[in-house]
Length: 116
Image 1 (cartoon, helix red, strand yellow):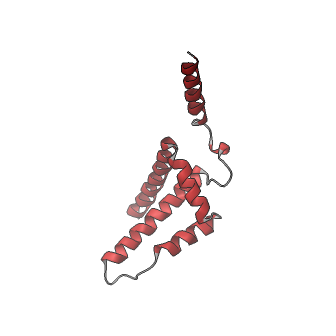
Image 2 (cartoon, rainbow, N blue to C red):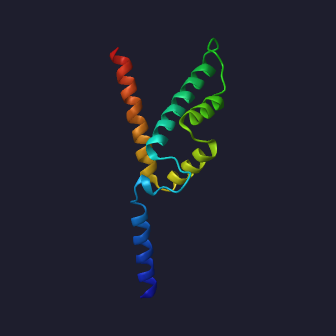
Image 3 (cartoon, helix red, strand yellow):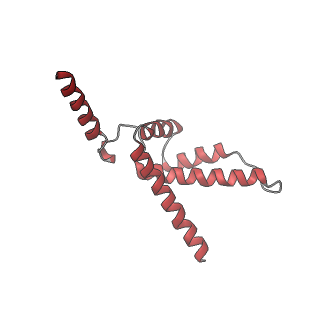
């Protein structure tokens, strides 16, 4: 009986901890709104790189430099980004929310471009 009670308490505490807000983030973890912006920028950098690789007339560049520049511009380090990705990957709902926000922002940008 104690074993089942222990398992129930463990599951309840796990569920409650998964419902925390972004203000409950551990130190050094990038907030979800900033992560979605970073994911969006990284996706655009990756798309530009893939285009440059497939087009011989396109200017070649190293995407790593743009990744670093994007993080630095927002005040984050590579280590913070790696820790944050690891942190968010432990909670698939939070990670899905981040990617959904990035996709929504990308769709908004695309709508603005196509409406011009």
